[in-house]
Image 1 (cartoon, rainbow, N blue to C red):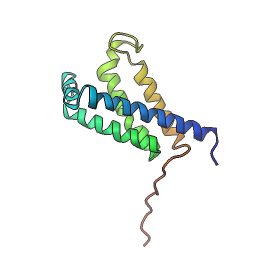
Image 2: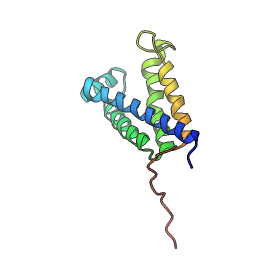
Image 3: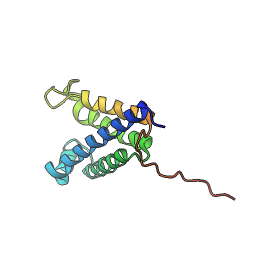
Image 4: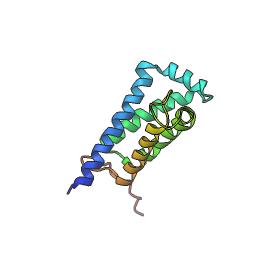
Length: 136
Protein backbone atom coordinates (compact mmCIF):
# COMPACT_ATOMS: atom_id res chain seq x y z
CA UNK A 1 0.00 0.00 0.00
CA UNK A 2 1.36 3.40 -0.89
CA UNK A 3 1.12 6.35 1.44
CA UNK A 4 2.09 10.01 1.14
CA UNK A 5 5.77 9.18 1.78
CA UNK A 6 5.79 6.90 -1.26
CA UNK A 7 4.27 9.62 -3.43
CA UNK A 8 6.71 12.17 -2.02
CA UNK A 9 9.64 9.88 -2.84
CA UNK A 10 8.27 9.44 -6.37
CA UNK A 11 7.97 13.21 -6.87
CA UNK A 12 11.47 13.84 -5.56
CA UNK A 13 12.88 10.98 -7.65
CA UNK A 14 11.33 12.24 -10.89
CA UNK A 15 12.34 15.87 -10.27
CA UNK A 16 15.93 14.88 -9.46
CA UNK A 17 16.06 12.71 -12.58
CA UNK A 18 14.66 15.52 -14.74
CA UNK A 19 17.26 17.95 -13.38
CA UNK A 20 20.07 15.55 -14.22
CA UNK A 21 18.66 15.04 -17.72
CA UNK A 22 18.48 18.80 -18.21
CA UNK A 23 22.08 19.29 -17.13
CA UNK A 24 23.30 16.39 -19.26
CA UNK A 25 21.34 17.89 -22.16
CA UNK A 26 23.21 21.17 -21.73
CA UNK A 27 26.50 19.33 -21.88
CA UNK A 28 25.43 17.30 -24.93
CA UNK A 29 23.47 19.78 -27.04
CA UNK A 30 24.52 23.27 -25.97
CA UNK A 31 28.12 23.09 -24.79
CA UNK A 32 28.77 19.84 -26.76
CA UNK A 33 30.78 16.99 -25.26
CA UNK A 34 34.03 18.38 -26.69
CA UNK A 35 33.27 21.82 -25.28
CA UNK A 36 32.45 20.32 -21.89
CA UNK A 37 35.72 18.38 -21.97
CA UNK A 38 37.54 21.63 -22.74
CA UNK A 39 35.84 23.33 -19.80
CA UNK A 40 36.82 20.47 -17.49
CA UNK A 41 40.41 20.82 -18.73
CA UNK A 42 40.30 24.57 -17.99
CA UNK A 43 39.43 23.67 -14.39
CA UNK A 44 42.46 21.38 -14.19
CA UNK A 45 40.35 18.24 -14.43
CA UNK A 46 40.99 15.40 -16.87
CA UNK A 47 38.94 16.07 -20.03
CA UNK A 48 37.78 12.44 -20.06
CA UNK A 49 35.97 13.15 -16.79
CA UNK A 50 33.50 15.28 -18.78
CA UNK A 51 32.40 12.27 -20.82
CA UNK A 52 32.09 10.15 -17.69
CA UNK A 53 30.05 12.90 -16.03
CA UNK A 54 27.64 13.05 -18.97
CA UNK A 55 27.26 9.27 -18.94
CA UNK A 56 26.64 9.18 -15.18
CA UNK A 57 24.15 12.06 -15.37
CA UNK A 58 22.12 10.42 -18.15
CA UNK A 59 22.16 6.89 -16.73
CA UNK A 60 21.52 8.16 -13.20
CA UNK A 61 18.62 10.30 -14.39
CA UNK A 62 16.98 7.40 -16.20
CA UNK A 63 17.46 5.11 -13.19
CA UNK A 64 15.98 7.69 -10.81
CA UNK A 65 12.97 8.37 -13.00
CA UNK A 66 12.33 4.65 -13.42
CA UNK A 67 12.96 3.91 -9.75
CA UNK A 68 15.78 1.43 -10.29
CA UNK A 69 18.22 1.06 -7.38
CA UNK A 70 17.14 4.51 -6.23
CA UNK A 71 19.04 4.60 -2.94
CA UNK A 72 22.34 3.64 -4.57
CA UNK A 73 21.90 5.81 -7.64
CA UNK A 74 21.16 8.87 -5.50
CA UNK A 75 24.35 8.25 -3.54
CA UNK A 76 26.34 7.62 -6.73
CA UNK A 77 25.26 11.00 -8.12
CA UNK A 78 26.45 12.90 -5.04
CA UNK A 79 30.09 13.25 -6.20
CA UNK A 80 28.92 15.20 -9.25
CA UNK A 81 27.25 17.83 -7.07
CA UNK A 82 30.06 17.92 -4.55
CA UNK A 83 32.52 18.24 -7.42
CA UNK A 84 30.67 21.25 -8.82
CA UNK A 85 30.80 22.90 -5.41
CA UNK A 86 34.54 22.30 -5.06
CA UNK A 87 35.63 23.05 -8.62
CA UNK A 88 33.13 25.60 -9.95
CA UNK A 89 30.67 27.20 -7.54
CA UNK A 90 32.42 27.19 -4.17
CA UNK A 91 34.61 30.21 -4.83
CA UNK A 92 31.66 32.22 -6.18
CA UNK A 93 29.97 32.70 -2.82
CA UNK A 94 26.91 31.07 -1.33
CA UNK A 95 23.97 32.46 -3.29
CA UNK A 96 23.32 31.05 -6.72
CA UNK A 97 22.53 34.59 -7.90
CA UNK A 98 26.14 35.61 -7.18
CA UNK A 99 28.30 36.14 -10.29
CA UNK A 100 29.25 32.72 -11.65
CA UNK A 101 26.59 31.04 -9.49
CA UNK A 102 27.32 30.26 -5.86
CA UNK A 103 27.10 26.86 -4.22
CA UNK A 104 23.57 27.26 -2.79
CA UNK A 105 21.76 25.27 -5.51
CA UNK A 106 24.29 22.41 -5.83
CA UNK A 107 24.29 22.03 -2.03
CA UNK A 108 20.49 21.88 -1.93
CA UNK A 109 20.53 19.39 -4.80
CA UNK A 110 23.07 17.25 -2.92
CA UNK A 111 20.88 17.35 0.20
CA UNK A 112 17.89 16.28 -1.91
CA UNK A 113 19.91 13.31 -3.18
CA UNK A 114 20.69 12.33 0.42
CA UNK A 115 17.00 12.58 1.31
CA UNK A 116 16.15 10.42 -1.71
CA UNK A 117 18.66 7.80 -0.60
CA UNK A 118 16.96 7.70 2.80
CA UNK A 119 13.43 7.57 1.38
CA UNK A 120 14.12 4.90 -1.21
CA UNK A 121 12.12 4.16 -4.35
CA UNK A 122 8.66 5.39 -3.48
CA UNK A 123 5.57 4.74 -5.58
CA UNK A 124 5.56 3.48 -9.16
CA UNK A 125 9.16 2.31 -9.08
CA UNK A 126 10.50 -0.31 -11.42
CA UNK A 127 11.97 -2.67 -8.87
CA UNK A 128 14.41 -5.16 -10.31
CA UNK A 129 14.70 -8.53 -8.62
CA UNK A 130 17.47 -8.82 -6.08
CA UNK A 131 20.28 -11.23 -6.75
CA UNK A 132 19.93 -14.27 -4.59
CA UNK A 133 22.79 -16.37 -3.44
CA UNK A 134 23.06 -19.67 -5.23
CA UNK A 135 21.69 -22.50 -3.21
CA UNK A 136 24.22 -25.16 -2.42
